[in-house]
Length: 314
Image 1 (cartoon, rainbow, N blue to C red):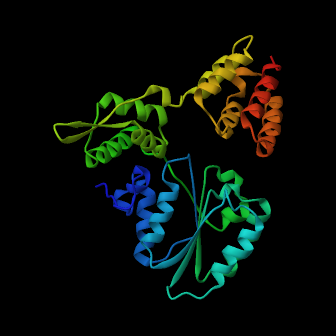
Image 2 (cartoon, one colour):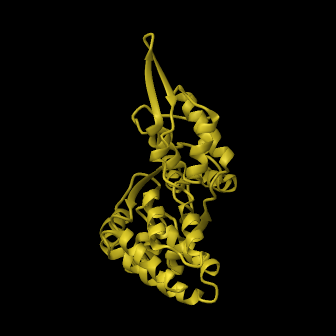
């Protein structure tokens, strides 16, 4: 059953799951969380997995169904040790009329090493009254001492069928007519990112006034779809005997990519495909340019500099 609130016009927020029954996928994790909610207590948790698969939704769902006070921090914006010392410690140390306090650190893999190190002591100092939920895309960026203090749970994307059924249910509640083929295009394009699927759906809804009645329908504008298989195309070009830098740049430009972390990881994981015998050099280059990306305003230039280095390995 899909539930909605009246205070949001964005489909992503309007239909964000408010309880475990409406949360899509990860049945094994839902059973564990259900037991915690029944006790009105939780472990310190780390949720990790791909973007748009429900990590933040699950964290917010938990605190909304607990008798607790909670603090939400987006660690990609507030990533330094000051955040831990001032906001987190301040919240954890204050008195509360509720039996539990919870700190949500969203995108915790952006926290600096110093901030993560400081967080270890905070977790232990306030363990009687405060719990922590961290979400991240890359759990390997969370230091081992933090992982050992938390229950680490991988958020597995729901199947394409579950995503399609969920989106179809939302469009039914919104009285939007659609062709199954259009829904299939969007799911195949953006899976497993359910958030991106819903944002694209909202962008693609059209309305017509027919005999005084508003008719809403889904119309796909393929020009706004970001190519989800651009990484495969980049890999294919790099695998050629003589890769063309300009061709790869066009692929990336067409995909309208702004974050290249997934591409860097993909190129590392598939180094044997395009640089057999020179995987070590690939790792060195990717490590160098991935690090430099943090200090570049135009990340595409940094990425294309890496591509040139990889081409030179041929």
